[in-house]
Image (tube, rainbow, N blue to C red; front, top):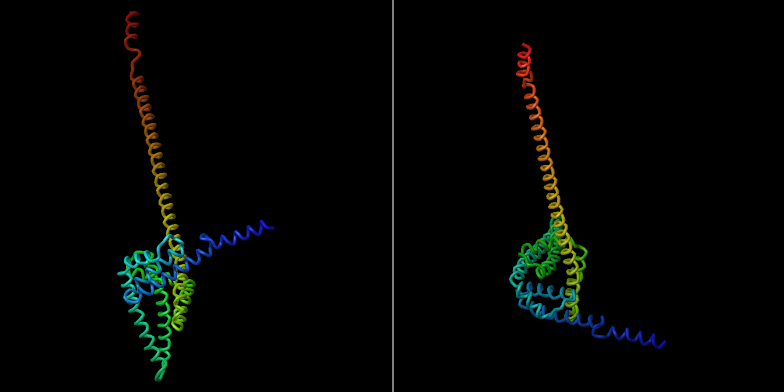
Length: 291
């Protein structure tokens, strides 16, 4: 009984050790808290929001994958590398968001004031739908920029495709991100918890999405390489068959030439035998002897 109790106690204490899940979980929570604080500070100048979110996703995904990293060092590295692209993406998304906001206000005024209009209501809901898609693209754009080195317009295009393709994950991230942000707007001190939580949820989901995407691309590349090898093998086999056929044709031609030569020689010899006179001189001698 004492041995079993001691063993159970060791297992419990092991969970509280430096290698235990509790310590690792608390360490990761602390790292995300530091990451959230750095991100908030770097977003204050406004023009750096794009690069800051990109760096936040870069560091967050490394934390989720348990890769060896230093939060501040990785953040600064990604911030410097993606500052220009992050600024371009930020400006494009900001302009698009402003236009959508103005359109929604105009359609709302058209639909709900004065005489009212069914067309205005339809347009308003359509633009609201576009705004929801825009909100999803905002999440994907900076996460993709942190992962892939590409042009701004292509980043936005691929973000739109992934946003629609991974719709369930997009809905979860949008509810978590924008829901917690709205909640924190009412209770400002909640940002201490909500920002790290949002970064963790989004980084966790994006890690899975990008992993599945990269595995699919690797599988396609492997299949293409195998098809190329198979095609090369078919070409080699066709060459081998063609060479064998050529050798066979050469052998048949040689055999035909030999047969023709033998036939010609036989005919010539036969003709020579037929032209030979076997009775000439001997017959004359015999006749003369008889005389």
